[in-house]
Image (cartoon, rainbow, N blue to C red; front, side, top):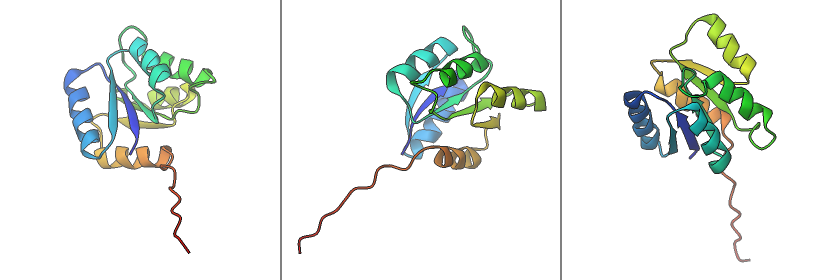
Length: 131
């Protein structure tokens, strides 16, 4: 399954999402602020980033713009997970470079579907049968 960077400053939300993602066989890397998100994305190249927008140190909108503006990380899909649910917040997230937007509380089936849609399938293995 996918290697996910979960960026969430709220400990209860972070723990709940991590456990639920791991139950679906995803590997989860955790970041608690925007600076960590930048560092861990560059270091680990996750398959996808789940980004809270209201983060300490560097806010999520800024992190998204930085990652999408960097040739090394621009192709990594980013899903905004946020309590900022006004239409202007969603528009701002997409303008920053988000690939998808999910309000909190998170609709887990919808989020899992979005993760599947945005992450590449694992490489196929070639099986050679003797003739």
